[in-house]
Length: 203
Image (cartoon, rainbow, N blue to C red; front, side):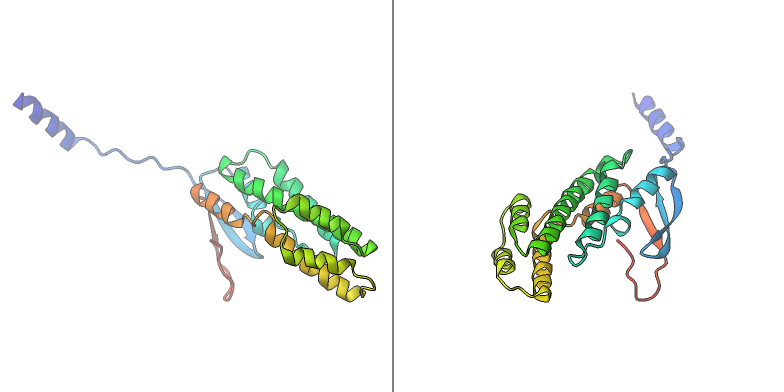
């Protein structure tokens, strides 16, 4: 029994160490916030490019209540892109779902802004607000009443609609940007960028 134990210990001591398996890393060149970057991760090149394409810096449209038609068009493109993307890791599902809901609500409100601007009535805005908000902030209801006030000057009307759009965005599905960064971190995907002085490097 003692001899057997000695043999086992000796074999264990002289055994070759087991080397940890490493996952091959793919690297691609991309542009982030106008700067050249290297995107690296344990996925194939096409998947890395898809992930980069749906990232906040690449996908988020600039939405302005002062130009609802153009903003609506850009938001629809982003929504189509986020929903049609396929063969992506499931860790990104939450980000895609939340962003889709947020864009859908913003598109609806931008459509309502176009109607409100033409009619000087807030009815379309009210309907959209009730559909997408769990609870309407008092300030938003007050702004709707202000839009309905007679003899509203165009400049004042525009300022009121801007405020209403900001309040609406603050109360719909929260911006899921952090979900994206958490997902790629879990996937061991990293951006390596050399930003110019004064520019923040992404998480």
